[in-house]
Image (cartoon, rainbow, N blue to C red; front, side):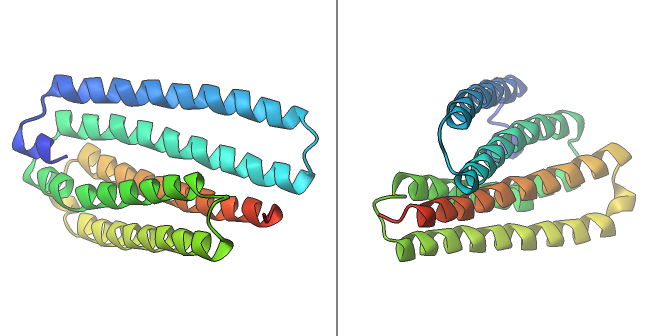
Length: 192
């Protein structure tokens, strides 16, 4: 993001990043299709199946939101070079992305240690993700308040693009939190 503001990332670089994200999102879709197909054919208890389905669905939501965000950020960067947009990208958006990235890294730690850590340690990890999600909620609310106060200075497209980015960031971290808690539900079902 700072590369966008500083001009060290070109439009071509942004397009390449977007294409890479699209490729990862499609790979994720394929993995989810194959994995869920295997699980639905197995002898899995209904409650476990429902929890796993939620994990798959929310994981897909994370990938979809990251893809949508890459497209929206690319569009906003190309279409809007206004001081407000630059301030938004360098400020709240960058902070939301970094916070969400940290939550995703912590989620991966939870996944890697799902059957290594005890339930108390896993709960602590999930609560850490939850507090990061609350931080993004606070940023979202602050950004929306500021956006509405400055709406008269923005084009229609710029206003709605920023709103869409903010809500998609919020949706992504909400899905990260949901996956964390649903994994805890699955782990509690199979205490070892």
